[in-house]
Length: 433
Image (tube, rainbow, N blue to C red):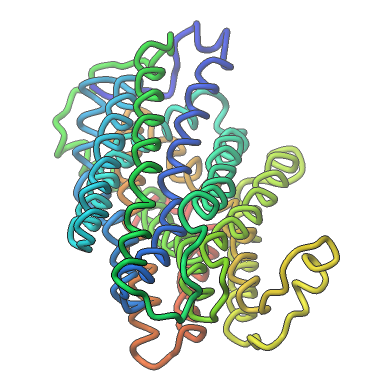
């Protein structure tokens, strides 16, 4: 069975109900995904991890996509998109409960396993919800619908770190201080109730996805087997290059959102756990601009071109900036009562603005014209999320290799160069010859 590009008539008549359900799923994905940026420096301090060890916390979450990407696509074909959303939420809720024994025993291994399993759940959910959003209307306006979903996803990314800081991090010892075992126990115990709440909230969304009268994508017999469809999908260069583009994009997105807290921790900034909110706020601004401009004033392709260029320029500003300079915060934050933060740190946050339109633009460009292969192609694109496992690891390795915490961000430039290539040429390729 394979999903076609058509949706049942009742979906066409009322697009708002599926948009509401899809939006709620994207909000939950945002809560889980962008909590990584707050929990990573917290665990780094509590468990006294090196930056490289801390990067495994993020990597284990995203590496799950490599394992679960294609199986998730096969599962969605069997149970449908609506049931797939519910199942993904159930897996994430159960995985969130694993953080309780991890906190009690203060074992990084259990935290990593919990991260891996919650990553499997979000992969199932991503595989179910993304193609539905792309295919519920015109492909020319698909980026706008994905932008709307992105606003909800990144709104969670702004809210969750702030709540985490208020509920969990309050009273934590200042960065750089030596923790006693009693202080470590207090930090660990502060995780238990929040994760019980997270698990309960996600389970409620699973129930919502199950009982909501959401019409599915229409299915038809594909006339081939899974391996044959996979081979056929891989024969489309614009899809394969799109998968690579998604992988590299997620790598830089995760670096900007989830390593900014660790970088702030190294700089001795007390509010390190809320730094992800700065990156997500910049992404929200980017999504809002995308909704306003695409497709009326700007094509998805041109938005992708601008994203690649903006990413390269901003990375150079991160690497070449001085941590003793506070020009950006003195202009944008301090006059409104905000904190004074180093320029390179805020440039990492500004990468969120450069990244905002990459995901919404690549998805419709990569799925364009694939018809009955859309389900398999979506599974491949979801597998590209595994790039998130590579990004933080590269930053950690770059730090250890001598580039330093700041210089390691230069490793992001090749990713933006590829995104620029895909925008200019890659998405147009119809043959490998």
